[in-house]
Amino acid sequence: MTKRETALARIASQHDRHAGWWAFIVHRVSGVALAVFLPVHFWALGEALRGDARLDAFLRWADAPAVRASEWAIVVLLGLHLTGGLRVLALEWLPWRGWQKSLAAAAAGVSLLVAVAFLVDLL
Amino acid sequence: MTAGTAQAGGLSRERRPETAPLPSSQLDVVIWRSGAGGRLERFSVPRAPSQTVLDVVTWIQRHLDATLAYRFACRVGMCGSCAMTVNGVARWTCRTHVDRVAPAGRLELRPLANLPVIRDLVCDMREFFDKWTAAKGAFVPTATRRDPPARVPPASRERRHADAAIECIGCGVCYASCDIVAWRPAYLGPAALNRAWTLENDVRDGARVARLAAVAGDAGCHACHSQASCTERCPKHLAPTASIAGLKRLASRSLFERDR
Image (spheres, rainbow over the protein chains, first blue to last red):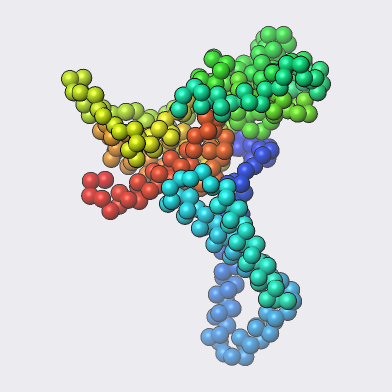
């Protein structure tokens, strides 16, 4: 059994993944997804430099329901990544208190609040 | 921490009464066997009251296959040599009751992850302990035998930090549970960094600056992503994540201190 095989077997077979691990995965995946979104974001901003008409056309397209739903997903990702980052800062810079799972829960809770608030605003 | 604390962290509180009916008379056990690329081998083992996973492995070696290789010594959670992967999770097998981890009567036993396998369930621990050396895990005295004993107030901040992390017995459960070790083989790992943290808080130690430099590199404390699997799995209920976070704070603070 090579080291890589062992690692993959473990990742696939750890039955009781815990709050800290999930918090890490959510933080990492949301970060990567946001990094993929950023070039699109900058491209959209760049459209403003190329004249009003192009930006207005883009903004009209962005009002389509499917795009608004994607926007909601981005807000959720931002909420998850921001609160996940605050969790890590608290974990690494504040005295250890043994409430790390509560931190993960708080991060998830705040993200959920942001998600619901944005959804309510959309509707 | 004393033996009493270790017991509280073990399985004594979950021991089933001797008279309780066993869910099934036989356990279905699959064990990793090395050789020819490796494979899982199936065994049927009789259930017994208060049976530990180590009991199961020993029964197989004594009654079914004498060639099965595994490692153990004390059987009571003191030596740290019997750790294995039990149903996907690294554990001490001597303090893991079958009832707790195999309610359906099925056990899958593999060697610890992240370490080379010597044979069957036996890992080569050299890499693990070499990293303790790399993290300067040895105490460096500053006093001689002619000096009076050092007085370290039990309530001092350094002593409390060291106390919280000192009871590690080097079983390798944290190391095997750490995804960062799997992804980045040079990473020193939770146990070595935890050890370094105890010495960084030992006011008698004379190598604290050099040690901090040793653990603050690319493969040191800053590589930790705070997944806290080490803390989740530590059979001694230590928190290596807290120790590593402490090292990160020390390293950051050292940027602003002249002597570090």
